[in-house]
Image (cartoon, rainbow, N blue to C red; front, side):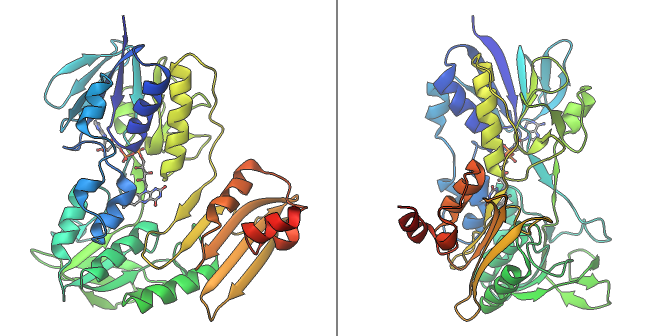
Length: 404
Ligand SMILES: Cc1cc2nc3c(=O)[nH]c(=O)nc-3n(C[C@H](O)[C@H](O)[C@H](O)COP(=O)(O)OP(=O)(O)OC[C@H]3O[C@@H](n4cnc5c(N)ncnc54)[C@H](O)[C@@H]3O)c2cc1C
């Protein structure tokens, strides 16, 4: 008889886990996926492209309904799990239904953080995390509307771009002294600012939000220096928080996220966590690739193989049409590392590689990202680069010719 395996959350990590299980352990488990969002799992990464009007919302489903049923996966979406009883091995859904499990996987992702300032609950103040948010932002993004985006990280920039493309007058407000400070060094961030300004987005750095102004709807954003920006719409993209409360209530160890070991197992038997809700070796990743790597390890283990998750290299691409940005690994360069830099301010291109002990450990590319995956492979594999070092910064074609 198949063992009941319940996956809480029907996001990107859950979908990848089912895909991997279908390849490795078909028939061994009776899989049920429970998702709060009222739709099939979709590619969340592409929400920015939906907002920018580059693809339709209907195009981002990860799998058609038939894919799930063909593989015998029971899908329940539109009803979240409200309680987990680890001892009795049951989950309870918001509609009161209860499901038994032999193995349980948390794949509950994260949610957007709201700014802890006055007015954050005013209508017109939004976040950017799911399909519902995209629909709300898109409705507000009409020609001539005044929009303020708070947060100059990847999501904030992509939201600002989507709003500007729809014709809104957009101001991007960022607390730090450069955009995407978690992925870019100062020269690359300066080029990015210039590229956004060229697309009509006003960028304010070192700008702290004091409060949102308005009575029945947001009317503006007041900064801590007293400056007031008029706004019909505000998108706050200031960070994410792992959805770990359900696990905590069930007595599972939670720190910032649900704590897992190298087997992506929690501290309770047969209970696992993958994706943005999981915390591995003190890190909660906010990217999809680590979620996929964790899903792969878990599927292998559920199929009876020994597999370990040892952590991921962070790598990011910005999805703003015509603005090519890539960052991976130790992009700033820790003490003891060296940097190779190639920069042409006039052309708006910048390339930096960080080297440690004869290996590439980080990269920032702006303007031309054609070799991004190759550099990422070098970082992930940790291969020695001494034979290609001279041409390394000029890209794969020249470096490989040198090595030949
Ligand atoms: C606009 C945007 C752009 C992004 N761009 C990139 C990018 O370029 N590159 C990149 O690597 N990453 C990007 N990300 C992040 C990426 O989407 C996430 O890393 C990825 O979706 C994580 O997958 P997950 O399955 O862990 O979480 P999610 O995809 O968030 O899925 C979790 C699901 O669980 C559901 N859930 C939560 N609690 C419960 C419950 N109690 N019961 C039932 N269901 C529940 C949630 O509703 C959600 O549907 C982006 C994210 C956004 C929002």
